Image (cartoon, rainbow over all chains, first blue to last red; front, side, top):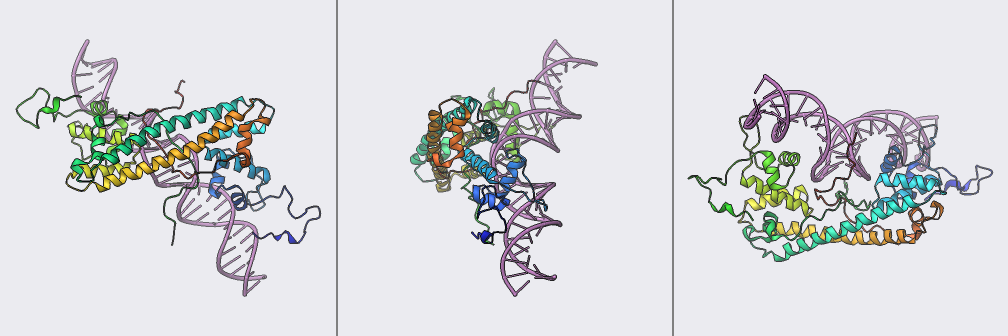
Length: 178
Length: 178
DNA sequence: CTTGCTCCTCTAGTCGCTAGAGCATTTAGG
DNA sequence: CCTAAATGCTCTAGCGACTAGAGGAGCAAG
């Protein structure tokens, strides 16, 4: 919030020069990526070498923040860090063909589609289980029964992938509160 | 299918008694759960204490194999091990109400539905990116551009959950080959 | 007796973070 | 100027659900 640049301590700088360097906290706020995650990305080689202050604190310029935003969007779309690394490298060399970027995005699209159809099959199966259940005793429970006897199950493991979805929002462990 | 289990738990010699004990490998083949995964499940407390041979090898009876199949199905439907533990406990006490099982399945169904809609949003965004790309140089690449500028992106992080899908099939790391 | 298979335990790696310990530095207020 | 709070630093460990591999033991057949 506080814009303490009210006193122009610098000659050439207006009130906010585009190359102003910010702390990791400010970069986190600006990019929407959490502080420890930023450090993790740096460690993972997704960020170029960052300058440091005398006191060893990282400094982030506008370009670094943009990179973080790029990474965040890519993660939101489910790209793996490996893929993102490649995409960032491509971004750094604008003259190259974007075929590789297309391939990565296309592959991701394929994954997403495969997962959607797998999840739909799953949804159908679960819905059927839940609906069919008489809500009585476990002995008659369709849910348990279906899990026990695959005979009742018309779902057979449409190979999806391994993991899914970042979506930073979700944090369903209850807040610290103490 | 194999309906030969008609014989009740019984002494007077069938040629394949239903309580025949098998090795972990046989149990793996019978249940569709991999050997190390079975050991992992045991460690995780999903299996009751198993008898061992003199030579310290685990022995699996028909009930243990059934339990493994149950676990496998539940995993295929995306239930977490914690939930599966609960479901197994319920299964072991058939007189109880199945309300809890219903709740677990219902919660899972909700998750799946939420994830499907999140993935659909994602699919739309990715498809748009890929389609819009002129397949030229990186400088003009819509894929890269969309990731860089959220302005071009009408997708905003529909909160899904954290991880998704077991589906034992997938193994996409390239083979060792060296 | 050797070969080859299965099995045992144990450790460490995967992925993308997140949490916390134990310090150093910076900043705001008095 | 001093102090307290906030923020930063590094490092380690943990999550979930496995998977991979080392190094050794048991066991049946040839």
